[in-house]
Length: 621
Image 1 (cartoon, helix red, strand yellow):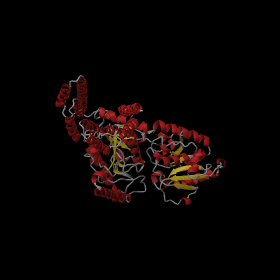
Image 2: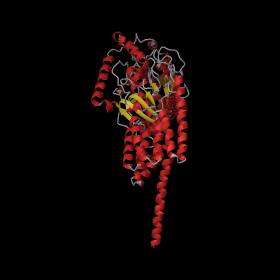
Image 3: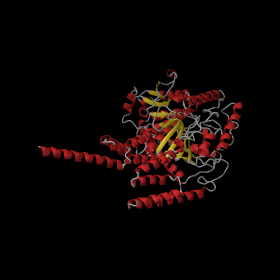
Image 4: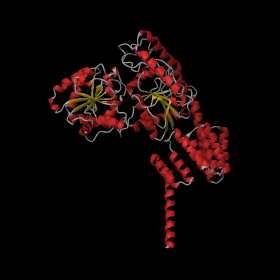
């Protein structure tokens, strides 16, 4: 399945890391996944950046426009603003990108500053399943990313408390524009928590829309408990006797993450520590991430570890903590919580957003009522004073992370949803203004689905007849069968591919090259490209076949089949040794039995050749 994910950033920021991990997981699950983003941190195969198709000048101009708008809107925030408020601004129409045109499913993620309502609507008109994964509330509000205790998003956002009065008409108009653009667009919404799903269902935009919950995933093979917490502490320059409290550095700067509560919490924790001589070690608070705060002014001994971009390094930080504390007052499904859980570190947090879905109090960690700083400090101190209990919670957290948040679990949930949407063409409810069952079809869609299934069955039966004729040596009859079907269903990709294969089987490799080259021009599909490789190689043009493979690899170097076809082309050019390496790579990555068979064929030929040389030497002696 070809899936194109769309995100503003590749892996910068919490929401971007979520979508990036899903993209990686889908690729490992043997789907052809591409990530399209506005900004990327570095060049990666399969990740396409706006600058690649807009050009650097236009991409920079777009970035500058958004930066200017963002800075101006910061000045319009009120003291009730708990999150970023995104103003309406320019978007990018990506509907014509090859990665979109070639996709079976389009999966939007956090697209702030990238796609506007009209751009999303354009994607919805392509006739492909469109899935929008929400990581915060910005998709269904007039601009705020967390609405806190405001329910304006259930109506019109006309009285937004997070911006000054003069900005409120703009906020209301932004939501109205989104409603107008997306009304009737076939859309399936995914949220990463049940809490966010409830908020989305209550919104005026997504009321009546099909909404599924797929929690964010992480690599539980990277985020692992350390065999020795003491060794993990030493690795960070801490004493094994220290009681280490980990906190995200954003806690010191971001109001939504608890910046206004941080000093009070640390003061309470210091008092708790002074009353707990039984700890047998000193309290140390370790902030991880970027901060310019003077930590010596804090009421507890504290240090900071610089931003950890490599997940392995971040996992070692988590493994050194006796507990993780987050002071977020408004959150969805925080990455730091399930990352700590996966590393066997218990969590202390407020019961906000999706956090209670992750932490069962007393089992994977402790929860305090939102904003109750003394209670959270007391619960943290009790965790630190009970290493055995904390260890049990850490083990339970690890177990829960593997069961619920492993990337393989998330990828499987997404692929099952995507397959359902592809199979049923349009399984959705209208976006705005109509009451419908979540799986209701729009008018006439049921007839279209039945017609599509009938057509697919006819194609399957016709292909089976053609293959039977081919196997009987009746190549002309096999081609006639497929040509008859193509006459009734011109442009059918499966039939066109089969026709190319039948031309090769009948000894008409040259004609197959022409047919498949024309097909690839219309459908730049990986399968068509690989079939074209076979035709070129069998037509005697192994160099041309290799060139096609390299062009396919430039689009997606991890696509299944590339190493095998590269090996076949190289072998045809007289390079069995290099071909062997490619076959083994294909088998190792995708367990391709045919690639292994081809490798065994080369090894068998080598042994026979060696045996022949030994016989000649024996006879000569």
